[in-house]
Length: 148
Image 1 (cartoon, helix red, strand yellow):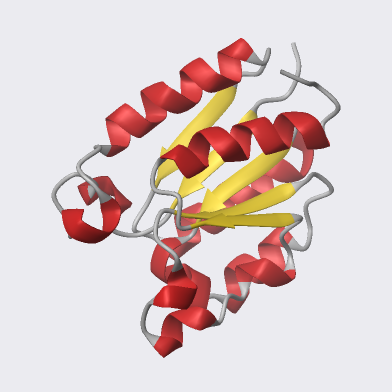
Image 2: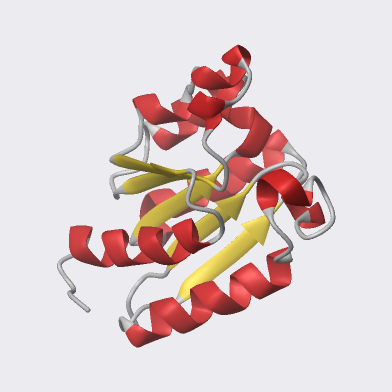
């Protein structure tokens, strides 16, 4: 069995669908997970989907990906702008990393314009709503040499 694509979601994403729907939309995180499973399955991939409000837990999942994941798709949420620890963990993984944001942080408050995660990311998808998750899986499939 091949290694899964790890999909990590940071703080407050457990509240998708109710938290600031004018920014993040009405889709819930379980609906996003279902969408990701369907998209990955169509491309011959398994996913391992996680969300945490804990920086330490996210770092643990990233460290586990060093030998246990084909690639990482990460929506670090607010940790994007604050976590050197997540950056350092991502720099250890040998697989592709796609940074993902539902909103466009560059069109928001200035403090959101800086991403530590981008320094370790293979690519960045932002501002396309939850459809960005499907696009990230499609991009990861391309990076891993599997087409649609």
